[in-house]
Image 1: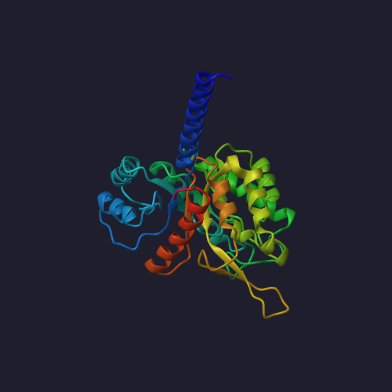
Image 2 (image 1 turned 90 degrees about the vertical axis):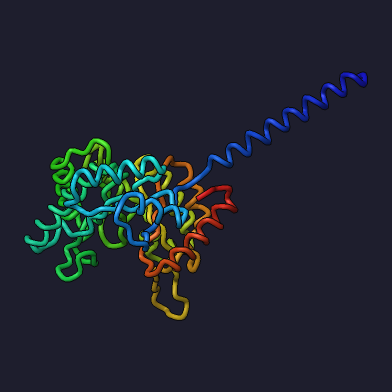
Length: 310
């Protein structure tokens, strides 16, 4: 090989390396997750709401208005979110539509219908609830019949009725997994999706709620990846919490905690979530703005190590 050919080859190799590097940087820059949480600043208008979100660096938000808000106000908040590139993640419909108390069940059904209608009107990713419980004292508590086939069938029936009542076209109704009621695993969620058989029934993913034993605690990375592998295309929103297994007792005791203080594998969580477009990660259950800031800092730090922006 003469000197001129060698020089030309070297230049081509350098150019290709530069292109590969640029493409790699571009790919990393595109890997992102929308982080959100409650805002503690008071707001009276869409502009003030957006300012409160941007103050925290959030690109996703809980629904900023309640059921019964005038239609013009709902449209104003939806437009403000769209212009600011904020995804409204979810409208909470927290209630017990399968309660053994008929009055409570009727009220919960109406709350689910009204909340799903609000999610549809404001363009939220989903309306989310738990499936409910047969516990007559604790609306979201454990009960021997919660995981029976009869309760599964009732959840299917009630969920279909909620969806048919609203007939959403751009949002989804979703059920958050719980340790002691359906869906309590990725596979039981798949069963519900098949049984409900409605294109606007989606998945709300909270992997912490599926950590129910030492095996799932220490193997939560595998659990997270399984959930996303099986349910990924159906996921509409996620909750971000963390979990501790108490070590000074012979009976397993699991406790929820702030992200960063437990053992949930946020590297795996963020990596899998970043593969889905515009699906938010919403922090919850903390009591102060400072706690949410600490949680957000931790999640963003983990994301940075994975090449994911939040």
